[in-house]
Amino acid sequence: MSRWLYYARRMDTVSHGIAGSVFSRTLTHRPEARAALVLGLVGAMLPDIDMLFLNSRIEYLQGHRGWTHSFLLLPFFAFALALLTKRFYRYAHHARLSTLFLFAATGIATHIFFDWITSFGIMFMIPFSRRRYALDWVFILDPYFTGIVSISLLATTIFRPKGRLLSSLGALALVGYIGFCAVLHAAALRVWKRMDAPPPDAKVAVLPQFLSPFRWLGLSERANEVHVAFFDIGPFARGNPLPQPPTRFSEILSTLSDYYPPPGRARIQRYDKAAASPVLAEAEKLPDVRTYLDFARFPLATVRKEPDGMTTISFQDLRFLPWFTGPWERDRGPGIRFRRQPFVYRVRLDRAGRTLDRSFVGAGGD
Image (cartoon, rainbow, N blue to C red; front, side, top):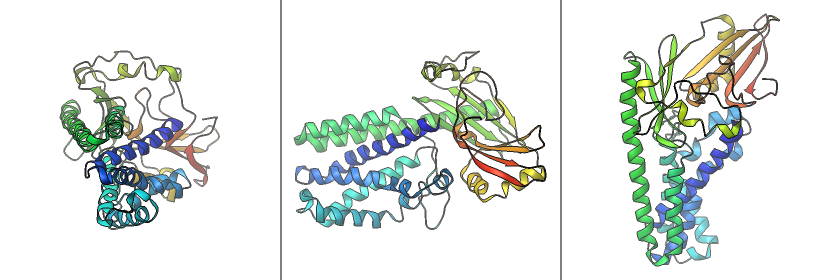
């Protein structure tokens, strides 16, 4: 799972760059086309430079999509990038600095906006707020998103005289697709609220899923439990009443649709929250756990007493729950169990409640 998420993150950055290049190209005719394409590409990939300075997964949860993703700092990054391009890129020497700034700002702005529409969350109000904002419209790795911008950029570079027109059409197509996803999100949220009937004070969300804008993960958090359901609001939803968990990686995609039935046949899973206890309170005081809980939107703690008297506490953000398995430590059934879990944090305590070790799940014996 962690390896898949790693490559998804890389592809996400590449998709950002392509999209930024397309949108910047819509701003100019041929004399500055190369500068627009390059600055849009570099500007749209620039915000993810923060990953070079994050040395652990905890730092990643705490800092990714932070300072380099801020709307308030965007003008400074765009101006610096425009200056560097004016100085070192020969196809930009003739362009006005203000024009180069516009290209760079457009690229950076597209990255920030396209991160906002996913579920990971983005801190675009830094330095005034570290709150993460997420619209939950589009999955982090969306082949339709990538396909639209890739075809648009290819057409723009092949048919250069019509590059601005073609990039504008591609940008409009992408905006239309995102708008379509936003409409589906609103519909899925209404469906989920009808299905689950959450109380007024419950935290509720529907999150986009892999490979289809019609598939959603419904989540609602109550005082003592969290409700979860996978469902498909599309016209071709079928699902499987008894889906079989994949036992090999090659089966993951082939069984995907089995786990997303129409809303009327979707099963709502209810997971009890861990009861308050001294060991849980001790674990939640740890700085890394506080960082994790600040990041998590739907955290679920699982407390397990070991035969030797030790206690293991696992924290999981149910936003990242795989469709074919339950929460870590609560589902030991058949199917794939990943050796690494980038979004499951575990703490072990001794009989006296002292911390023995803490880390993300990743050992071979897990």
